[in-house]
Image 1: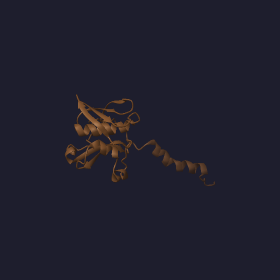
Image 2 (image 1 turned 60 degrees about the horizontal axis):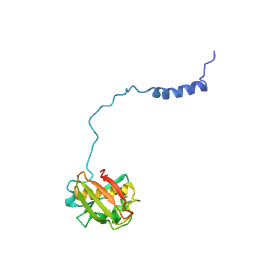
Image 3 (image 1 turned 90 degrees about the vertical axis):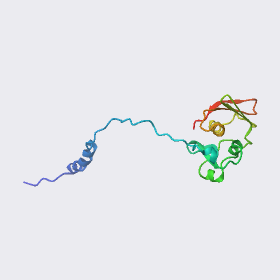
Image 4 (image 1 turned 135 degrees about the vertical axis):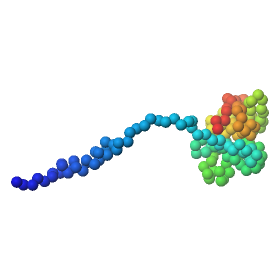
Length: 166
């Protein structure tokens, strides 16, 4: 009698055996989701930011982003419309606001801030509108719940009241 040799099919089957056993699983069973509370939250602007400088809102890699400029160096809107500094731009901070002079008039009445710009506002992107709304709301009432209306010179157009999402 002749000894039996293993053929190529048998060798292939033996080679695939460990992979097949791994595919079956290692005995770990699934578990249910365990609720442990709500999502974490944090304030993007420190509570004492107003005392330490000027808070401006620019466009960052993930949307609206507060930027703390050291020491009060003037009204917020002209600084906002001037855009990010070279260092801020190098860090990926940008603006969606067109170059301009900022607000020509700012008024507060019954929890509503009105910003009258000396330029057209119809073409402002939603992020540009948020930049203005958040910068103004932060300067008037940090952490408050104020609405901001933006008006411009383009045929008395007015952007509906905005709240700061940050």
